[in-house]
View 1 (cartoon, helix red, strand yellow):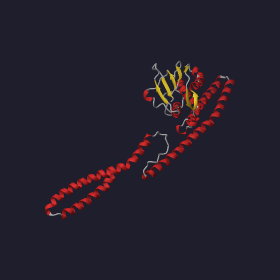
View 2: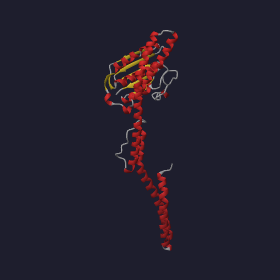
View 3: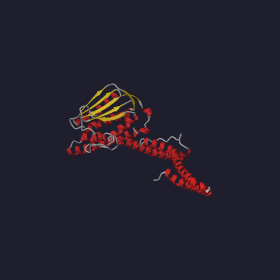
View 4: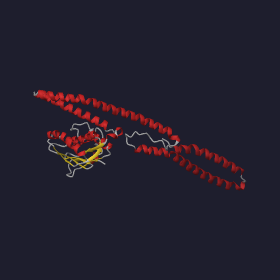
Length: 328
């Protein structure tokens, strides 16, 4: 890859120097013999000065001309990977308008593709929820009426698999709802965060009891502005994640104070080096634990559309993980 500056220097400097050398040679020939030595020294000095001036002028001119491209590059580098907004063309020089137009056309095509994938994901997840719920109901009905050990075991396995499919389907739907660039701000409304958390914790009591985990909560009145369904998904995924990674006999505590939600467990915790990566999709810290690796990615996206700050730290006791969601 060659530089535009070096190309221009290579193309312009030799012809300019040759023209000057020709003019200098003519002046030298026409000068009186007594003045030729002085003329030669003057011509050499002028040639050096002119060459340096040409190099500086070309370098400065090209650098100034490329400055809008540098600004455009900086703007694109500062964008998030999923920011597909068109590039503003107000302050773009005339020569760069075709480039910006081509970029915006490409961004529009990528955005249409992303929107189509999100719509497909949401439609598939939505269409799967009803038949999976019906399948779970039928399996529960069969399990209540067929108590033979072999039959009960098979029905239990099918029921467990169906519940996992339902959970993953709900997570896919949550991902589609929480897509930052497709989130509808008009869905935001004042909500009682403590009431949302209280309802979420109650739905996890049976799951925690089966694993012999002590689940509790400390709820103070707190009102925030948000989307009820997405915030419930955020809370559910944080609690579910804590229960999944906490060993039997452990404890999970959910706390709410004004503008703040925390979920604390005394499980194995998350090493500091891996805390930034657990919010990526399909990342799992423990292959022995069932899950799709989408739960914390959903939490990240929902926190993002609510302008909330999400962080992981160690509890005061030093054992486990403490997830904090700070709302503005």
